[in-house]
Length: 407
Image 1 (cartoon, rainbow, N blue to C red):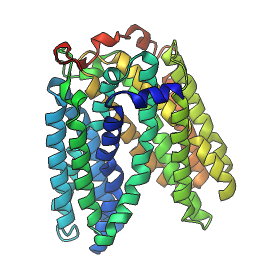
Image 2 (image 1 turned 90 degrees about the vertical axis):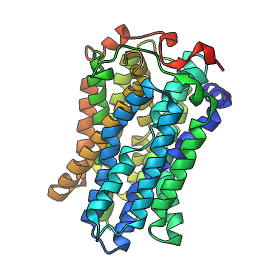
Image 3 (image 1 turned 120 degrees about the vertical axis):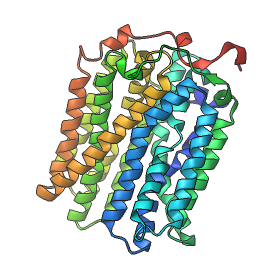
């Protein structure tokens, strides 16, 4: 546990990590808060699903754009500006009757998602300045990947706690919490003093680097695996007559991811990160393979836990690779593209798994998770990510605080 404790004891890390998690809570709150608000006004699930999709889709599409602006400017102005706009959109959505004004509600959902502060990419570009040594950086990546599971576990719980004051209170809480968390992050000294590395501007940004598109495609497959599992486990629980078990099984999967990510902080740095990613992706796909047996809920519970264990390690390995492969001055945008890739894959996986549930069975949805994990392994096979070795850059050439503002 020494690398983990070393990271947590580093100056500014507890504040920035906590502020990032708090500021990103609206991502885990918005889907449930939107559904509850629509249903309270007598709307159907089709409208609720459409508004949720608009929120998630706009966040995925606009993340890289905001990341590029941050790379070319500074973190605090963009983070705070986005937080204010997103909070205002959430408040507008809370004040609206989405059934009577669906177009206006849709616009509010789009703005709330599009203006999502890019706290996740901003934190990841700071890690190399916050901790010292390559092993500590890898441990920080793993801790980062593990703790983000808390967003999707705690987010819905916060909404349920807030709705006591009214169904729209979940949206109001998302606005307030997102604004406070972002302000807490943006006013920290490392965020204020961070400066991007000047680079030649190119319309493709980090996408022009060799191997990056394949890396993002593999991450989309990982997202597809998770999306298919979430929908598949829900359909499985309903088919077994235990609908309430779905929440527990999903929570067990997230718990496995949290524990796996914390354990991965103790793993030494890989000499060949591309080879390690290949092994980790294979473990991820293998973790979902036993679900094809579709046992009873009590037997499925430990399998759901184990299937989540490899996810943070996969993400941490991808973070390390993109830090090597992204051209100078594009690292924030590159991390934003990673979030977009995972989000798009997750949405596609959810849609495909829903179709598989309707036409076949829950086992078909679980099979989709295994197959998409296998495709991710194929994309990471030798020869696809070999460019990562050639693209490795020294820490001193990456985005960091300028020497004049060294802290």
